[in-house]
Length: 302
Image (tube, rainbow, N blue to C red; front, top):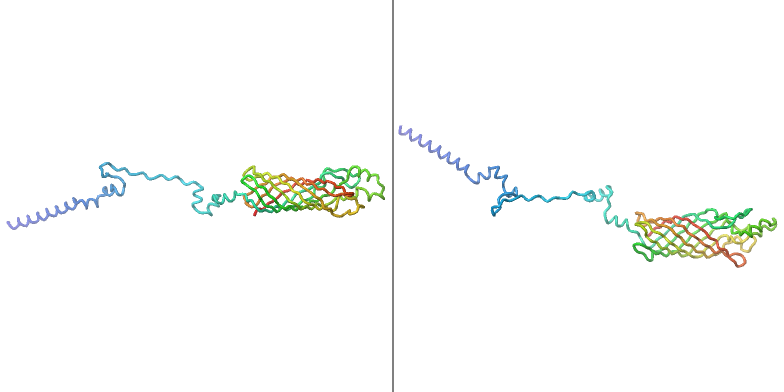
């Protein structure tokens, strides 16, 4: 009986020690911190909240707001090829595209030409206000010697060719004399003057360009030099030198516009030009021949 009580006491003591050991494990701070989910969720290092060192509660700092990307920024961020496809051009490229080139240039003109006045050399020798419309071509090689954001002043060499037909240099008196002339003397009258001739030009041109808009300019040009008129339209068929060319001084003035496209080295325009030629005639005299041209110049600046 006494031995049975001893075994019972030993079993109860062992059970009691086991209970104490389990309780001590649950009550351990390290074990509670590692196993408690609430403690992990409220860790100040992870959440940014909790009690501060001075005892005041900590408030989580709001995340900084970011502005949404604009469409040009998004296009430029994905690369230059995507930006071009989306229709955006970098600032540097746009600046280059908007620059108007100045300096050494070559300009070509193609247009229409007519002389003013004259008469038909076919009876009844009717007067004409304009000759037949014929082509004119020209080339100018020049340099912008002075230029600024709003203007450019250029000097160049001009070479041109214009053509006349259908209007001879016949006066009313000469037409009346030819209408009463007998067939055997017609060859000595004014109706045998040439009504078809060419005017070749070589000289100097001055030009002033003034910008009136971002890509538009007004033009004023003046030129002068020597011309070759072939054949001489002031000589009758029986006069010495008839049918030959004559060296004649000439001048011209022009008004026009110029447009600068995105092709930075090119410009195109439209011009109205007045041309005056002083052609030497028989007996030491001379005759003034006025002309008018409408051209479309194309210029390339290097």
